[in-house]
Image (tube, rainbow, N blue to C red; front, top):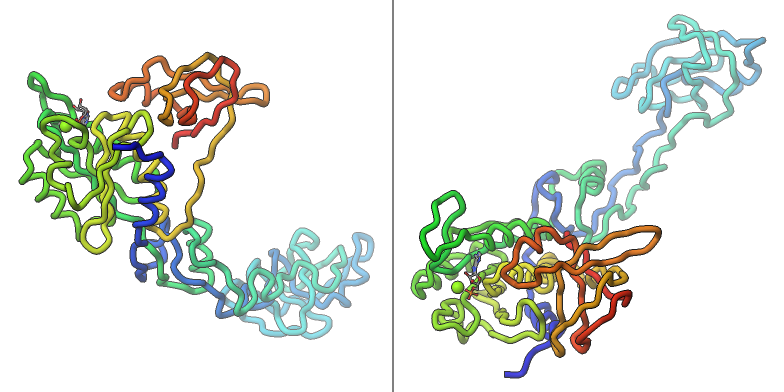
Length: 402
Ligand code: AMP
Ligand code: MG
C-alpha cells in the first residue's frame, strides 16, 4: 500500500468534517464556544451621557473663572448616583454632586472632579475651571446602536462574553465546544490506581488524549479501557456515535494478530499508512450522520503526535473555524539529526530562546513508547519528508507543544 503524506491525510479529514450544529446557550455557557451569529448592539453604549469621575456636574461657564486664588462657590442641589438620578436638571448658578457612571443632568455640560473642590455637600468651593464636555463620557462613545460588536466565527473568551452581556444578551447562538470521547483498547491496559499484573501497563493514552482535547478547546471525556474483544469494542464505539461530537480510539490499528479496532471498523473507516514518524498507522471515518472517528496508534508518543497533527485541526473544523497552519518557529539545531527518508519526522525536543534566537535540542529518547521524553519536551522538530540528515546549526521548523 502506498503511503499517504501527512498533508493528504489531513486534507481528507478536513474535507469530511461537518461542523457541529449551532444552538442557543446562556451567555456564561458560551465561553470557549464559537459564535454562530452576528451580534449587533440594539442601543448605543453608554446609553446616556454620564460622568467619568466622582465630582460635580456644572455649567462650564459658571466655573470659567475659578482658580486657586479666585475659587467659585456654587450651591449643591442634590446627588446623582449611578442608577439613582435624583437630580434631572440644573440651572445656571447651580451644581449637583455626581458619581462615576451617573447620567449628566440636563443643562450640565462639564464635570469638576472632587479633587478640585472642597467636597462640600450644601455648597461647594471649586478652585479650577473645567471646559465644556470635561469628564463627560458621551452616549455611543463605546458602541453605536446597530453596530456589529462580534462577528460570527469568533471564539468567545472572557472579553467577548462581557461584550455579549454589555449589549443585553442573555442567550446566544454558538457552535459548542465539541465533546470528544476517548476509548483506549488493549487487553494489557489497567486503570491507574489499580495494581498491575504481569504483562500489564496502566492506560495513559485515554487520559493524555482527553487532556489534549481540552487543551484544543474541546471537552475531553474518557471511558474505561476496552479489552481486545471485537464485540465489546464495537459496542463501545456504537454507544458513542450519537453522544460524542468526535470519537478518538487508541491502539489496535497496526499489523498485529489482534488489531481489534481495524477488525471491527474495516469498511466504515479508511485505514491508511501515513508517511510520518511516529504515527504511521492511521484510520479516519465518519460514523452515523456526522461523528468523525480517529483511530490512533497505541504507542503513547504516536497517539499524541497524531492528535496534534490530525485531531487538533479537525476540532477547529468541527467548530466551523477555518484551517490554521501550525505555528512553527525556526530554530537552530544544537546537534545533528538523522531522519527516515520519505517520512515526516516529528522529534521530541527542547526549544530555548536565548539572546534573540531560538535553538532546539532533540531528546535522546525518540522511541514511540518513550512517554517520559515527550513529557519533558516542549516542542517537536518537524524534519521534512525528503530530508534524511541535518547538521548541527541547521535551521529547522519547530512546533511548540501546548
Ligand atoms: P497497539 O497499537 O494496540 O498495537 O499498541 C502499541 C503499543 O502501545 C503497545 O506496546 C501497547 O501496550 C501500547 N499501548 C496501547 N494502548 C495504550 C494505552 N492506552 N496506554 C499506554 N500504552 C498503550
Ligand atoms: Mg493493542
